[in-house]
Length: 184
Image: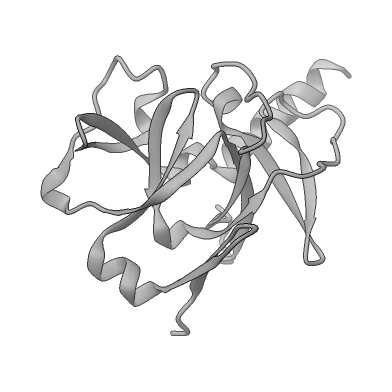
């Protein structure tokens, strides 16, 4: 199996981690979204880019903000805050897009790249399995199936996202179909 890498792009530096490094250390990429700290497994993360111009796609759910051209590939951009039903993410100077790789939910085992809008990317942290508590059934303001668990760091909770559920291509496609059918 070929080792993949993650490249974190900022205006000042780039960081590269291999799959083996990320698995052995239990690494998660943390980011802020509306004042809450969220994290996703580093193996899902392919790169981080500055927020730039998006091409809007008509008749999509509100959480699909548009698409970008990423080195010749069309990548849909999801507003994670809107996906959680908490309104639109305000675009600011530090707003970024995290490009993640998720299963395509199809029988061919292909991968799909999707970008998620975040207020600011924090850091990559090590979280051991012993530090992860089960997801609560209430109190987080997002669907419980979107959460893999909670970890405590510096007296704050980090919500560990189940990115395969949050960005389920089949679920988002069915929501898009509902929006389109509503206009027909």
